[in-house]
Image (tube, rainbow, N blue to C red; front, side, top):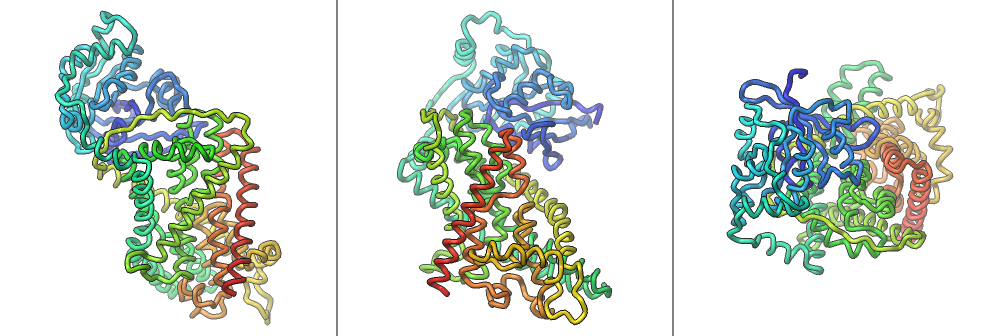
Length: 617
């Protein structure tokens, strides 16, 4: 697309910029990282009515070009043309929230001062009108010296006008009356707003009403707890029929392909290694997408910043900041973006503590392990006729991670020299209905990422694990299953004495090794190990969960509970540790995180196994 029109979206956080990007590009977008940093780079494509292609770059949100974080530095450098890989931008679309022009025009004034070709996108105009605001866009355009287009990105309104403006190239270096205005930037903005904006009603009654509930010190915390509880109930209840269908499909696929492969080793590789490995992980995709759906809805609705504000005092007592809430919530999906999201925390002390406790949030990669063990050991029954017991246990596991993170942060607080307080200053956006298209695109991206992991890392590890479990092959007249004589069997038996006090057998020890590359692999690894160590094919034909719950694998309830607790605390995948290294620049931090998490995992699993063994046998 060398002849494409190159534009970049720039704006404050919560201005609707990402929704606009999604409506313009749809699924024709790619996400990567900028060279040498972990800042996300989103580029998409679309075609104007005239047929001219457009390349659009979605820059990280920033309040000012005076950068104070890595995200803001990228935006500043692209605007100033300092990033070679982005090259020259034909125009910048400055997206602003029409309901909060006083704050958002500050960045626009900085862009105007640089003299870049611009087009002002006045977003959320429906909300502005609902509040009784009347904006004279023609006069605003004249005062700023740049074209202005009204949009409502979440409803696709104004997109045609925006595309028409781009088609006609209604953007150029600003020519303004600003030079005739006296005073600093804030005074200039006030003068412009007094001239172009008329307020009929200053109150946002809907937001005021909802804030009385969600920001109330008691009702707010109760509402947050109820929302989280509903999410974890839904993860099990809604996903069940989809998971059953996926299990049935992969079972049929294994049988069908297995019938056409006569060579025993090749049959084992394809059926026990590839199909069983991939199927054992794909089955949990519905649960992961349901979790992401709720997170995206909360983000789109404008609730997340309020939750951060609500929890600020509580989190401060634990040595954290309210700004840590969003990175920690992101870690429920994946610790990698959670650690990266700590860049929004300006205080280095608070940022480091948040990074250190982020792995204690239960990421979606651990969900397959939880789901496997919960379905095996916890009966699928209702409690008090309302609550799913399995969902209750899942909720308890998530809460264990949250409580543990607060305790660890509190302990770390005592070792910090700087114990000063840092005020939480953040914008609370208007409540709004979630943008369905943005949620759909977000879920689609997450599904693609998950499937790439299945097709890439998990596929490769499944084959590697099959090889280690198959070779060297058992001698003639072997008394034990063939896997006992393999490389994996040797390693598992070597590790077993170390993990015996927490109830892990040698098969579990084998599965823990590839789990360091990707948490989801532990389910596929267990499936492969037990498929190759089973005494008969009928046992293999049963689902892994059924085998565990039936007692055929020799797992006790204490072992299942110990393994659940192990995965609450055990260090995240290698990708997370690599991200921590890139974000902190310190191997010492990575080493400390790894040691304390392994130590905590072993200690808590040991307590769980010994106590459960005493009471349940």
